[in-house]
Image 1 (cartoon, rainbow, N blue to C red):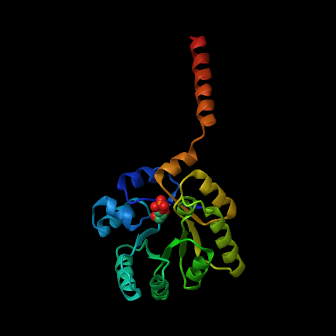
Image 2 (cartoon, helix red, strand yellow):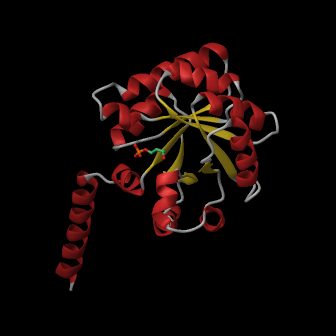
Length: 217
Ligand code: G3P
C-alpha cells in the first residue's frame, strides 16, 4: 500500500517525510486555501520535500477550462497529478487530459459507478471519500469494496486512492481489501505507528536494563 499525506501544510509534510513511508501528497482547494499562498509556490515546495505524486485540484467548472487549467497545473512539476471532481464536465475533462498523457486523480467519488466511469476515461487514480460517507451514517468501506470488485472484474489499472480517512481502521480495512493508496492526515499516520503495549514493553526493557547496570556498580 502506498501512503500519501493529505495536507498542504509544509511543516506537516516535512515532519511526515522523515518517517520514510510517505510516497506522495494530495491537496484540495480547502487545504490550499489554508496556506494563504499561491498554489504554484506551495506545489514547488512540496515537490522539493516529497519525491512522489502531488495531487492539485482544478477550480474551473467547464471541461474546456478544466483541461486548460489542468495542463497549467501539470506544467508546474513532473510529479503533479491533476485532481478533477467527478462531475459531468469533469468526466469530459478527464478524457481530454488522460489522452494528452496527463495523470488525473478523480476526486469526490461516492459511488462505484462513478469510479467505473472514471476508470473508463483513463483516470490514473480514483479518490473515494470514506469519512464523508461515514459522517452521514453510510458505509464508506463498502464503497471501497465495491470499487475494487468492479476494477478487478475488468482489469482496470486505475489506482484506488482511499481519501477522507478519519482513523487507522479505515486504512487497515482498505489494506485488507488491497486498495492501492491511502491518503491520510499526518495525525492518522502517527496513530498508525503507535501501540500502548509497545511503549509499555520498551519502558520495562529499559528499566530492567538500567536496574541491572546499577546493581553491578
Ligand atoms: O483531500 C481529499 C479528502 O481526503 C478530504 O477529506 O473529508 O477530510 O475533507 P476530508
